[in-house]
Length: 183
Image 1 (cartoon, rainbow, N blue to C red):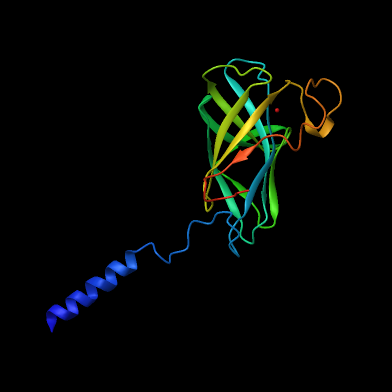
Image 2 (tube, rainbow, N blue to C red):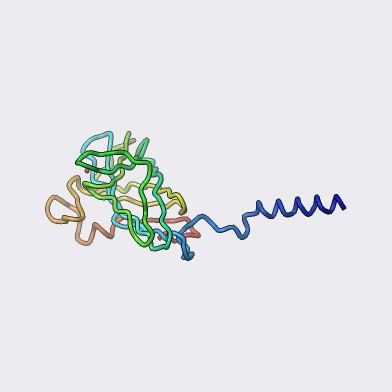
């Protein structure tokens, strides 16, 4: 009898450790209250110096649960940090909120990414790949096209050598095969 009880307890313990039936990390496969992320408008202005650059994009969350952008990596830089601008001063932050049914907008003069310790200085027309990591969702890989140093999608006139139709819709995001996450 003791052997049967031990076997039953061991079976229940192992069943409790199983990943079958456990909800997957919140991603964008359409689950009810999970974040459903997509990325648009990604770009990097051509850096004017050799050691750092900025990056901008918008993360849209069409899901019913908020998420957080917790880190960003890129082979271009030793480190990618997240900054917010307050009182015309930059402040590094550990993460950015991505609200449910809302968006995180990284743009000039506001929240943005800083690429520190560039391996090489990207030229206009290059593409820089980054991986966005979130608290709940799977990582998202995004290509940031390098635009002119003065490029600003909010003011697409003057000083920008990019073609028509670029800006808010540029910057492709790719996702793990089983997910469709969407200065």
